[in-house]
Structures are given as structure tokens and as C-alpha cells.
Amino acid sequence: MKERLFWVGLAVAAVIIPLLSLMTGPAGIGWPVGGAGGGNPLLILRIERLWAALAMGAGLAAAGVAFQAILRNPLAEPYVLGVSGGASLGAAGAMSLGVVASFWSIPFAAFIGGTMTLAVVLRLARSDEGPPTLYGLILSGVIVSSVCSGLLMFLLTIAPSERAHSILWWMFGNLQMPPRALLEVGSVLLGLGLAGLVLLAPELDALTLGRETAHYVGVRTERLIPAILLLATLLAAVSVAIGGLIGFVGLVVPHAIRRLAGPVHRRLLPAAAVAGGLFLALSDVVARQILAPRELPVGVITALVGGPFFLALLKRRQEEGVG
Amino acid sequence: MSAPWAIACQRVEAAYGPRTVLHGVEWRVEAGSICGLVGPNGAGKSTLFRVVTGLRPPRQGEVTVFGWAIRRLPANDRAGLVGVVPQEIAVPVPFSVRQFVLLGRTARINRWRGPTRRDWEAVEEAMEWTDTLALADRPVTELSGGERQRAVVAMVLAQDPRLILLDEPTSHLDVQHQVALIQIVRRINRERGTTIVLISHDLNLMANVCPRLVLMDHGRVVADGPPSDVLTEDRLRQVYHCTIRVRQDPESGALALFPLFA
Image (cartoon, rainbow over all chains, first blue to last red):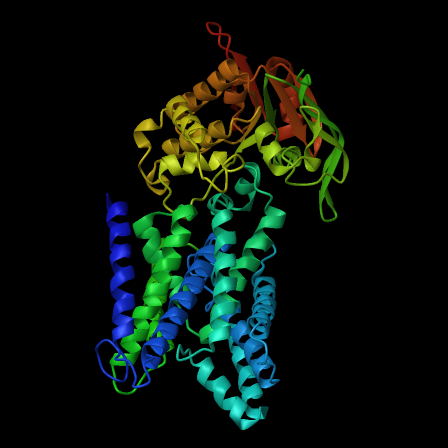
């Protein structure tokens, strides 16, 4: 019953939030009117912006679901793990080198950056006995993240000023006008990554019980764990390539959806992807309206929601005495 | 058709780094039987389990399960042969008992279409056998120790392997729940013909549940046979370094073991 209610609510939100997003902007609230030349450039602009929010939010939320399952850590999330930071460093590196000609290169560079940071974080967090602990993982993620942002600032300083400006703008977490080709390439990659994870849903379910139990019920853990980590990193990296550094979507959304739709990944993953897109689209509406006509970067909104949420989860874990 | 040996270990050696924990273990378990594995902490019982399930590669020697080299089997075939009830399963997310039991079907679930009616039937049957039907919609995270252990057994039943290894399945249970769990396990053995291997520190329980016991110490098999032959006072003193009395209940014939705290 609760679950049915949730799906109905999600469907309603999937109608209302996009409409809201199309109807708001610095030009005021209302359906954008066509231009004199017959076309409707404002509407197209808003559609692309909505598209970017939906794609990126879906990618981040699905990545969060997968990271939480594999690392068995409720706080695992692309931003907290440093994957987003590494991906943004990779993407910014590609931009500062001026390789923006092909829109495959930015997601690709972001993926390389994200994969490398994840490898470093997992390596740092690894304890002698068994899997990384809750705190080890967060601590390594935070540290690697700050190293990445240091390198990013270095890149910004040495990059030619017009490139530095576009990197900076993108880095803030911004859904304003990612290039159309990047959106298309990114959406295809996100769709493939998400489909891959949904097909691995039975294994993801089993892996929440740990590597050993998953092995016993017939999961080829030595291949599947790296494969799932790579898919999740791909989703996070492509999201970062589309809209920059936006935190906590992969934390807030999976937790809320797990409560409402249950922990079974076959339903959780698609639901979290849809809800993640809608959450980011709504945050973007708020970011556009709250100080209108000035705009806030959407990352500000998600951080203001997600930061306290993260702390509350951490607090609860501490009280439960889980390390 | 089926191989006579559910488990056949030949000269199995296993090590964690430089530390050798199994020294040439020879161990065979007849298909359809119940076999117990006892021995002090660090004797190598759990490592032997891990080798038999393919989780750890042996450094030397050969391990076959129903005649198959376990490390070379595809994961889903392996799941059809061996299932494990581990010492403890931490369930971090609130799966309902029904969803949890379905995890036993992981290797069989069609990833395109999801669980079929056959999968759900296996789940219902497993819950019926383990008396967990009434708990089907409860979150696993909220179950008591005894209920949770039955849910784990149900999961392995839904997996339906030909051999089930149980690692200390009763260590967190009171006597009533211990007896209930053992009855379920015996019924699985009797009616499904599933081979059962039990690890436990509870010598009383093992002596009276397993027709055959294997006693391990320092990575070696030191005795193998019926409980009354294996659990002698002399041998127990050698292995456990304390005095353990062994007596037989004149009415039921059950063995009773108790340490002396002198």
C-alpha cells in the first residue's frame, strides 16, 4: 500500500516538477512565449536545462545506490567518496588543455579521473582485516577530494583566462547551458550505465549481505564488484561532466527512496534515478527563484539540504555504535 | 549418477600469508550424510569451509564437491552444489523476510525478467519448512536471533544446494531454538537428501546430532568416526588441554560431555 502510494506520488512529481522547471526562469514565471522569428528559443533553453538536471540527478542518485550497496556503507556517495572531485579534476584537465572539440572527451576524462580517485580512496581506506570501515572511507574520500580541489585550483591559475572562466563556471555546479552535444553523449552513457546496473540488480541485492554471503549464493564477486564500481563511477563521472560538482544527491535520494520503495534494487535503482532527476530539477528551480533575478549555483541548494542530512545519518550510526 | 562423495579433500594445504593453517587435510563426506566438524579455536575448521566453498584457493591439494573441482565451476553451478549458513549475516538494509529468502535464488533469477513463479514457490516452500511464513513481511533487521537464523536457513533452502555447510548455526540461540533449528536441518537431510556438514563448539550438541564427527587440531584431522569413538576423555585432554568428562545417559544413550573446573 505504502509502495503503491509512492509510485503514484513519483508519477505526479514527474509531471509537476518538469512543468514547474519549464515555467520558471529569470524572465519571470509563466510559459515562455515564442520569439518574433517564430521559434521559441527560451523554451528550448529551458528544456535543455531541465534535461541536464534530470540526466545528472539520475546519474548521481543511481551511483549513490550502487556505492552504498557494494561498500555496505550508508554514507557512500560520489561526492563524499571523492569520485566527483576526481571526475571534475579530470574534466577540468581536459578543458584546460582545450580538448573540448569532441564531446566524448570530457565525460571520458571525467571517468578516468573518477576511477583513479576511487582506486586511491579504496586503497587508503583498506584495513588489514576486511573491508574499509565507515569512517576510513569517508576520511579518505574527504582528503582525496581536497587534494583534487587543490590541483583544480592550480589548473585554474595556469589556464588561459577565457578557459579558466568557463572551467570555474562549470565547476560550481551549474546546469546553465551545457552544450547540446555533451548532453546527448552524456545521456546515452548514463542510460547505458543505468541499464547495466539494473541488469545486475540481483547481484547488488546479494552483495548488500557482504562479499562472502554473496559468493555463497552464487555471485562471481571478484568480477562483479569491480564491474559495479566502474559502472557507478561512470554514472557519477558523466554527471559531473554535464553539470560540475554537485554534492549529496547520491546520498539524500537513495535513502529517501529506500524507505519508500524498499531495498530491492530492481525497483530501487529506477525509482532512485527518476527521483534523483526530479530532486535536482526542483533544486534548480529553487536556485533560480530564491534570489531572482539572480541565480544561485544549484550545488548550493543540494549542499544545504544534503549536508545536514549527511550529519544526521552519521550521528545515528554513531549512536547505534556501528564503526 | 551422483558421485559417492559430497566432499573430497586430498592433501589440502591452505595458508594466510606465511601462516599455514591446514596441513594436508584428508577429508571425505558421503553424499546424503550428516557430518560434524569439531576442534578448538584456530584448528582450521572455518578455513576448511572456505576452501570447500571455493572462497579460498588451497595452496596445495585437491578439493572436489560431488566430483567437481569447486574453484573451476561457474558461480551459478557452484551455488547449486554448496550453500552456507554463516556464523552471522549482517543485514544492513531492511529486506523483508520474503525478499531476504529470495536472495538464495540470486544465481537462478533471470536478470531480464526478474523472479519467476518458480522462484517465488521455492521461497514460499523454504519459509514453510523453516516456520517463517508468519514473518514473511517483517523486516529481517527486526527479527530475534532465533527468527533470523531460521530466515538464513530458509534462504539457503531456497537456493536448494545438494550440500549445506552450517558454521556455528546455534551459537547465538537458546536451547529451545537450538533444538528447533537442528530439527529443521535433520528434516532437510532426511526428506531432501541434502548432505549436511556442521561446525560447532557445542560438543554435546554435536555428539548427539552427527552420526560422524571429525576432530581437527592445528590444521590436521586428528580423529574421524562415530562420536563415541572420537570424543574420548584422553583425546579431548590432548586437544583441548583440560579435563572433559564423557558420560552416557543410561536411558537415551545420549553422550554428555562436561568440563571439570578443578
